[in-house]
Figure 1: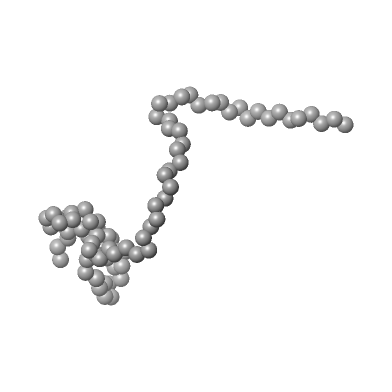
Figure 2: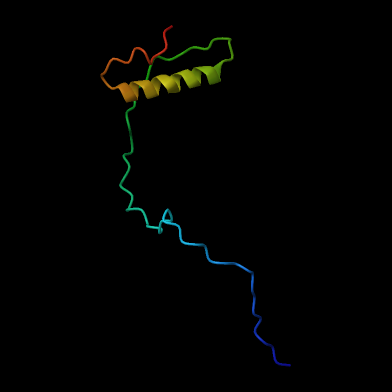
Length: 84
């Protein structure tokens, strides 16, 4: 018995060229990452949630304050930081 090679057709068609399409390019080689990074300059005071059980709220407000300190770096950003 002689086996014929199977011809498969899936009905796929080539895409029409689109000017927004980009050819894949490999990213440049990664740079070395430092072992330790000091982020204390952007950190705020430690918050005590006590018996409130509001850890997600404290985490959100701390993240917002951290971003504000990082973005404002030395400029007057009192409008961005929450008042207590």
